[in-house]
Amino acid sequence: MKILLLSCFMTLNVPLASSSEKALSIKEFLTLAKKNDPNFTKIISDREKLTFIVDLGLPSRKAVVSLKNEHGLSSSDSENTSILSGSISKDIIESGTNLSISHTKTTSTDRKEDLTEIRLEQSLYKNLLGRDVRLKKQALVNEEEITRLEVLENYENYLDSILGQYFNFKKAIIDKNLSKKAYEETIKLRNNVKLKKSKKIASQTDLDKAELQVLVRKEDLLSKEEQLQTSTNSIQRIIGYTRAIPSVHADNLLDKKLYELNLNENTKTSDLRQEKISSLRQSIATKEQTLARRSYDPSLSLIGGYNIDNSSTTNRNEAIIGLKIDIPIGDTKSSADFLNKSLSVAQSNLDLDITIKDLEKQKSITKAKLLKTKEKVDVSKEKLKLMERIVRSEEKRYQYGKVDLDRIIEINSDFFGYKAQYQSNILDYNRIVLSWLSLNDKLIPAIEKF
Image 1 (cartoon, one colour):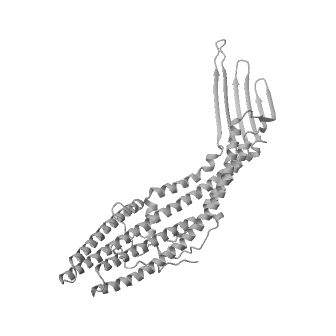
Image 2 (cartoon, one colour):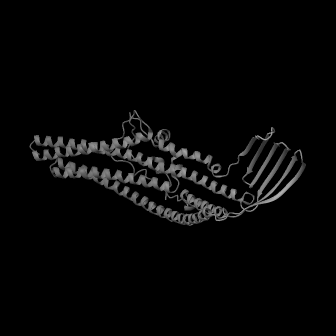
């Protein structure tokens, strides 16, 4: 079903914005919003997090250089002890390997030491060959993807919000124009009654009724102008205008390019950003649970190296091999962390299930509203056409004295009420279109066509 609403969105007898005014199209509106709205800047700035999420969560890859110089002072003899040492170490986090080299020179009263040590320490059990770090990196990559999807989701919600305000602005212009038109028509009616009174055809009561309608319409026009000013202020805040007041050609409420969208396109729930975000969070929770369980495992490492000893009493080179084991005892914190992560896994499973069901429900409800509101637009358009013919007919009959003034006042009030309802139905439809596009992750690509 490709919904085309080119005909049903044409506004009957509504004045356009002045041709001398600079019309604010959707494209220009969005361009100015991106340039001047701090809310947009805030959303886009979140993309900067993508550059450091992984590095921030992993152990540092830095190489550490250490230098030490010590002097020992003794009151028993004139010889002092000195120690000069330097070392450099580097963690290769992806493989769970630590490399280090150190050199120490010690001078004392009875000997001189000159020792160089080269060491390689490789994890064998906990963080086997960097397994835990790689798993942590996978979780951080998932988090990075969540951030990217959330930026898109926030941007689409932002578009939904400001486009809603844009259409409210156009609706406010149309409402003001309708009210002004009704006011002008009421003045014409009042002048007509004056003429009839001067010819003894209408009474003073009839003139008073006409004057009252003029005041009622004037009051309504002032209210609509106030609403338009409020809407204008909202638009100016978004686009950053400080001098000029924006305007639009308000003959309809939706751009032709949006009319032609195929609103029957239904994105699979598994392909929607919200479902992907929940699924990624579930994956992260599972990985974090695994890491928490391993955190209180014993740590076993293989140590290999080489010593070069050129001391005054020893001249010896030797290969080194050994094992290093760390056994945590009474680690209540790690145990509590594992229970917490297990709870997070259960919660993430529930959240994913709820997200899928909510998305399916929202899509079903929104699609039904979309079709129902489209029918309401069609009905209100037909009502307006019929009412327009009735008004013309009744006004002719009034000229010949076949209907009274009360009837003319009543049908004119109904006529402009039908016009206002027609525009309200269109506005409702526009909002649901935006919601439908946003719900199916289609709003951003739709806007990019402008």
